[in-house]
Image (cartoon, rainbow, N blue to C red):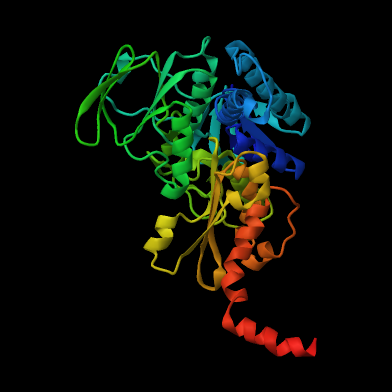
Amino acid sequence: MTATLRCDLCVIGAGAGGLTLAAGAARMGARVVLIEQGELGGDCLHTGCVPSKALLAAAAAVRTARRAQEWGVLRTPPGAVDWQAVRRHLRRAQAAIAQHDRVERFEALGVRVLRARARFSDPRTIEAGGVRVRARRFVLATGSQPAIPSIAGLERVPFLTNETIFDLPELPRHLLVLGAGPQGCELAQAFARLGSRVTLVEAGAMLGREDPDLVAPVRQALSADGIEIREQARVLAAEPGPVLVVAGRTGEVARIAGSHLLVATGRRPTVDGLALERAGIAFDATGIRVDSTLRTTNPRVFAVGDVTGGPPFTHAAAWQAGIVLRRVLLRMPVQATTRAMPRVTYTDPELAWVGKDRRDLEAEGGTVQVLDLPFAQVDRAWCEGRSEGLLRLLLGRGRRVLAVGIVGPQAGELLLPWCLLLARRLPLAAMATAIAPYPTLSLVSTRAAQAAFEPLIASPWVRRLVRLLHPWG
């Protein structure tokens, strides 16, 4: 006989969104069931953000060692790499963070954790591991998985994805990276710095969503790391080896051979096996359909994170979880707007953005003023030997901040005050009058904001006002 659990909230998926929901709801006094067939922590902890950023940190250390002579530090040989030690570094980082995602921690909060595959049996019931769960509300937080492109012959070629590349026993001799989005660029640079030969293949433009002016320093850095970048290169076929057969800009066909192939061509929502049709939940290849409150076409069911086809970021899933908590448990009329949703590509230099894309703003037909402040105008950048960065402001009428882009060292860290400015609709003057400690890279933000007011300060009417007031000293 199948046991039946009744609860206030049933969460399917234990990634960033699901864990935030389960812990938050339990602390607020709700009866919570959390269902996860794999390990708690999701893609971010096990095969995504955490291992990739730990790998990038190791790669950055190699670059620093190899540049040490520029600062008068002598070491021979510079930047030798022990791949097994790098792998241990990745595992240590994962193990430390995994302590926050242990089953015991959630059970101590009062969450009932079911380690099983979930499947809807009707619009308000889920079955998992021989248990039937009936809840007042459900939240789908099942995330996403690598999207594998349809390429002739690829099914006969062993290839890597983000789910398998961190388990390689040896450093690749020549890594072919298919896809020059954020993930492809990050891993290409990391392996190049660790000693692999890397070829990056992209059907369109590298980091095609981003502002081309901000992408340029990233492209230059990847090239300087020895990466062969092939843009506008359409893959016609894949062959064992591995070998990619590609057509270039002018139609010329080339064969690119390597020792390993990494497929980094995007993500697709994980909905397989959920039997969403039984619950009346609409979905397509891009994800589960949700409204502005993250409610699905079944009024009892919400969805957060990658499975919705929205911003594919861990921080987006966690933020959406907070929206659902307030909506479901506190009945607050909140909506999931993405006006201030940041994104960061963790190459070196990093590329960060918050606000609408420049193309979208220009397509809307409004006035868009572009203001750039180079990192070279900030003293700390010269002290660090990293003056190649740029902060770009996109301003509307009345100097209203529409978007901010940063390319440079620690761009992701520098983006936070701009996220706050956009989220709270603060005026640019709030940034311009803030006191940033000297000498820090954060001065790039305050000085960019101040630069927007320079035409006003030097205007004829301000000069006349000063002359008028000066005699009254």
